[in-house]
Image (tube, rainbow, N blue to C red; front, side, top):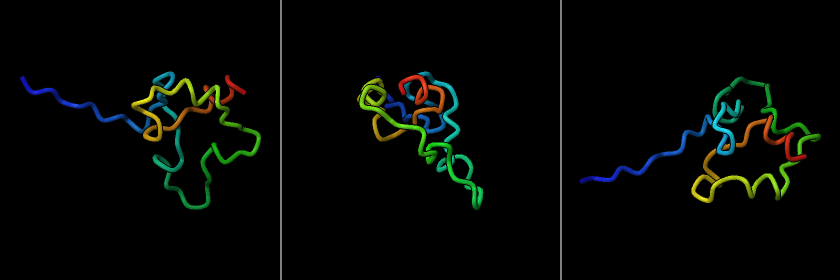
Amino acid sequence: MKITKLTPDNNLCPICGKSNACGSVQMKQEGKPCWCNDPKIVFTDTLLAQVPQELRGKACVCRSCALKYQ
């Protein structure tokens, strides 16, 4: 039996599984920065610890999860 390794969907939040609305991945619209560039949003260590090890650095957290852990 062949085991296929799942590739993370970088459009989905690795914490909640909903769309992360990542501007870097999805938008590519000139002049419109991603929501994560808002200086009021902080990606805390507590938040980042919620990301499964195998998805760290591979998928962006969504705004809702980022705000939840502020």
